[in-house]
Image 1: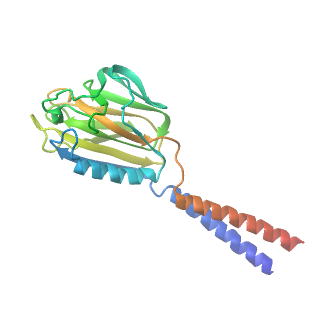
Image 2: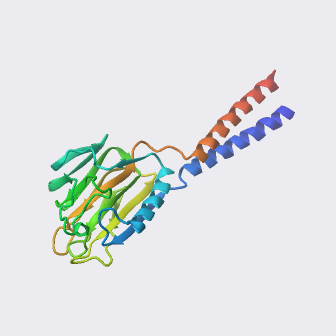
Length: 251
């Protein structure tokens, strides 16, 4: 009877551990946005609010999977309509996209985009749309956007996670002669997203010329957070002990 009691106890522990592990894997489920705005910020910053949003995003995204960052610093300079910017990641759009290493409006780069890192490279978007396509679907995405002006258009991120989703850039206080830097990102655990589109021609006076830099995305399939891994190991250990206890009882 003693072995029978141990077997039931261990089996119950294994069941609880399995359920807890499965619950933990979805602890971060849901569509969550992260956004920060810095008015009139230029090359070199400071990007106080945007950096804070990026840090919060990185914490949440890191619990879902591995984070890859695309700085565009090794990309070929010049115009493109489709460009592989990282393994399994393509940036594309109509004419008006280019890889730049100097601000397109050097007299006031805060109005037209620049690299987050002084001397670095970035995507200059004068096309109106820029789409990132992922060979392996992602569950999170974020990036820095520079030169945002609501005077020209409401800049957005759109994607489909089973239903259409839109994130509006923070452009409060921007306008003619006043630009902003944003970090915009989202996590969407449990959903597979194959493409994300940045749009800068959704109304206003025309296309808002912007810069896109330091794109952060899920670089591989999701992995359970460490707590879930530990619970899964406990569950397997419990099943092994239960099997051994049952074998001993039979002898």
